[in-house]
Length: 426
Image (cartoon, rainbow, N blue to C red; front, side, top):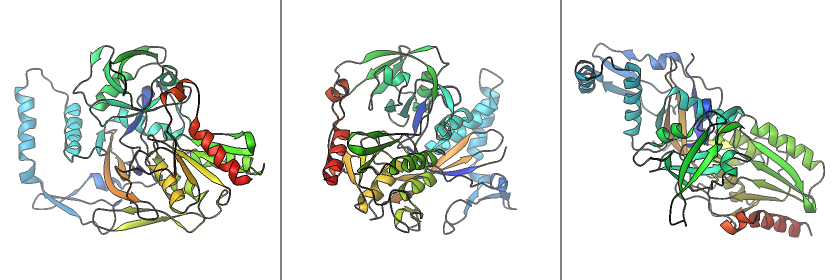
């Protein structure tokens, strides 16, 4: 299997979309620049005569220095522990592959960065699947695996999770009546997953509710959406992006071409509960609304160097009146899009403050079906060099969406967007 490196702007924390099977858990947000292949030699480091290992990172900026590690001394305790496990552990033989994967997991966790992690092959397949528009089995929700408990970022449209009433911010504190306290998010995630047609009982802790409550969800086959669009009353076009995947840009352009031919009074771009996706897709999406060659974002590395990303030419909607809907689930690549639009005054942001995911992760697929490692390599800044990591974007017009609104099938945020565009057309 070829080794592959991909750059992502991860959905806030690892937003993993709970769907089952290959992507039984879901997906993160933020994403990759497709097509960057890592040379196989990177996983076969050159060993010098003094037993040092030279690790080179070709996907990192050229200014980042090569790292030299004296493995003869450094890894002696590790191999001592490895030998002791094989010699002394009561239940033999041990699973060497599981030990190896556990060691990689612990190494990445030792960085202390919630956005860097090791993914075993199953989680890797799951965490990148919703960007390809595939079909999977599960409950259909994007989740955050990095907190004390597995957290719902957003249920997917028409999913079992949505029909069961799960909401953004819900914490899964037990699965099938078993307390999940102290269990890592990816472990809990696997417990939530399962075959279509089977039931899972989730115990939910919801903000504002005094007591946890149980929700029984029947898992189903789920097709991950990327975009949808429709014409609203008052001749206003509406397009919603659910993620930034491989079909997002062509679907967006399809809707833009269809709607712009009707000469709409304005356009609403809905990025609510969109956790992000591929960086390349984010740049392409912004380019439909921001004229070239304006800066879309800066990617800043730890040594102070940066990459600059500019809008591409031939955007279809660079002049139409625009409103962007955002909320606490708008993260990463979505924040790149909304931040650029806000910085240039290209459109009005309506909703509530966004998630605040402003770092860039690099995903490297390991050889021999070894899974992948995801490592934070940079932070991104808006065109006005705003840092949104752990800060988020403040909307131009703050409109909350209450529980009563949801219960009564009301959407005051969308209503405000329609009002702004309608008034602008008068």
